[in-house]
View 1 (cartoon, rainbow, N blue to C red):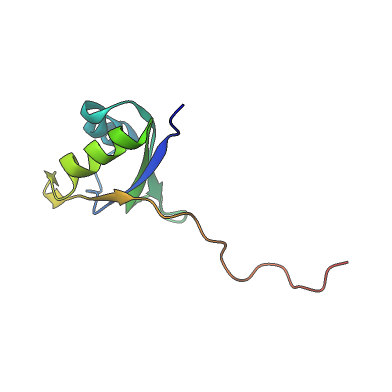
View 2 (cartoon, rainbow, N blue to C red):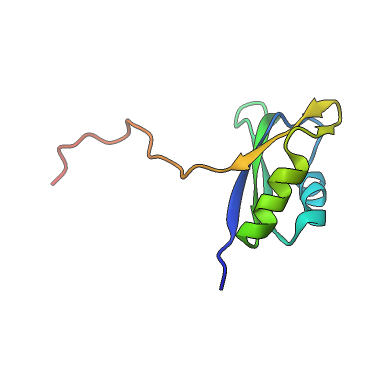
Length: 96
């Protein structure tokens, strides 16, 4: 069974909702999830998000079909999401 593929979507217009994002990707295949990243303090969109497609072929079709496409006056950036890296900081290293 093919595993799902997560895509990074950048340069999203601020008026676009999670559902709008999902609808933009549905012509390319099954959308497992679509989420626009929101600013914690202001509650506004940060202008980027992630879409998870059900398999690699659909993800590639979405990249080919939507990267550079103008939606609400902004050309989307769509590419394969990089794995999330652990951020430095947090707890000290002297735990027992």
